[in-house]
Each structure stands twice: as structure tokens, then as C-alpha cells.
Amino acid sequence: MIVTGDDEDEIMKLKKLLAIEFDLKDLGKLKYFLGIEIARSGTSLVLNQRKYTLDLLKETEKLGCRPASTPLDAGHKLSLRDGEPLCEEAKRRYQCLVGKLIYLTLTRPDITFAVNVMSQFMHAPTDAHLKAVNRILCYLKRNPGKGLLYVKQDTLGIEGYSDADWAGCIDTRRSTSGYCIYLGGNLIVWRSKRQDVCSRSSAEAEYRAVAMGVSELLWLKVLLTDIGIKVEEPMKMYCDNKSAINLANNPVLHDRTKHVEIDRHFIRERIDAKELILPYMRSEDQTADVLTKALSSTSFERNVSKLGMFDMYAQLEGE
Image (cartoon, rainbow, N blue to C red; front, side, top):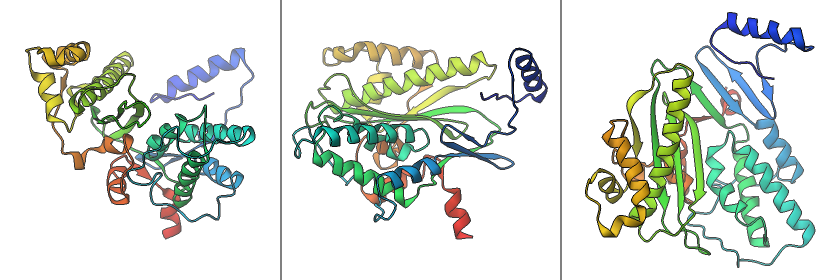
């Protein structure tokens, strides 16, 4: 059991209360829990899954592999029809491996898009899909200790970044939504998900991605309010599509936008209530880009650097 809070007296009261009913052993400050390592300094906290990653690389005999610079080849487009079907035993190994990679995304947003893509082939994986999964492992070999860095901040503003890869799925032509949300400059939420319906334009795909990210922003606002934390408003959701931004700010509904009417009203209400603004951001600066498509090594590194990731083991080795 993990007990957390900012009031030491209340934490001690809770421990004593639990000790009345249960046989407890206090293990002190949290250092390791369910494969996640926690390291602290005076003003920061690092979460990583280094041991979990190294165990996975050892299990798959990838400890000696050549490291890859990105989880997927740039511009990668895999489909259900690529490659030869795996035998049942190999299929089960593929499913187990992808499942373990999904757990690793708890502290590795840099592999979230790649793992999301591979999970879409769980029911009928091929040797081409397995090769792509092995590429993810080769990427993990490069920095097995990389994790999330959280730095103490005086303010707790919320801002998000949303993006979409229009019609990126070859098999369904559905778009991929991606968003990441920061609290006080620290990454707390990230997601990559194929949209449930086909979008007829890039603006529609981007708008659906914005709506998904805004839903998360509002949920976080309610959560923080419930625990007594005042959220600075308006919250920001950065978007790199001017048509989607104009659609959100335009009070007039046109026939060509009726198919996104619900999302449009949902976002418009937030803007009118001064809860939300949608600032424009250039595509090359869009952090959420890394959650929607396979990028070149240069673009990938640029976007990952904005996710607040840190490899304390690399720093120690450098010393």
C-alpha cells in the first residue's frame, strides 16, 4: 500500500488508524513499487522502469543488440496484410511481449505511439509486426534507464498539446489522436489512440483530437478542485491546425461542419466560459507529434526532449 500526501501529521494518523485493524510494516520512503523505481532529490522526483526494461531485454535476448535511434522507422506504415502470419506459439509470444511493452509506457511516453500501433495487430500478428516490435526493444536498449522527471513548481497551471495523423491507418483510414498534458510544467497525462470513426478532412481529425484532450483537461480540473487545488484559467490546449482552431472559435455552424457538431459545441462552451483557449503552435514545435506518427530521429529527439524525460543512470555513468 502506498500512502501519499503533503501533511506528515495526517499521514502518521492514517498509519496508526490502519495499524489498529491490520498488521502493518512501515517500509519508509517509497523506492520501488510494481516495477517502477522512484528516486528523489530536494526538489525533484524521477520515475523509471530500468530493472523491468533490462529484464525484458534479457528475456528477449536483446541485451547485446545494436541500439536504435527511434522506436519505429520514420514514415512507417504497417498493415494487417504485411508479412507472413505467425504460428500459434510465436503469436502468443508476440501478444505477451506487447503486453509488457504496454506496461512500460507508464514511464516511457516516448514509445507510446509505437506500442499503440503494435497492439492493433494482437489478433493476427505477422513476422513483419514482430520485426517492428523488436525494433522497439532495440530502441529501449539505447536508454533503459530513461524515465519521467518531476520538478517542484510554485504554480500549477495546466496546458495540453494535441495532434492528429489524418487517415494514417492503412487498413481503416482512421486517424490517430495524440495528446499530452502538463501540470506545473510536468508531464502527467499522455495518450495515443486510433479514432473511432473516419474523418473527412485533416481539420476534422485534429478537432477530434482536441476534443479528446480537452475532456482530459476538464477531468483533471475536477480532480484537482476536489483535493483543494485551484487551477489557473484559462487552461491551454495547443493545436497546430488553424482550421480546427477557427472552427472552435467560430460561433456560426456551417453545413460542412455538422458532422463534428457535438465536439464543436463541447469545446465552444469551454471557450465561452473562459475555461479554455486554443493557441496555435507550428507543426514542427508540436510536442504531441511524437504520439501520432513515426518521426525521423532528429524530429523524434526534439519532441521527446519536451516530454520531461531523464536518464539518471546515464548521468551517473557520465560522471
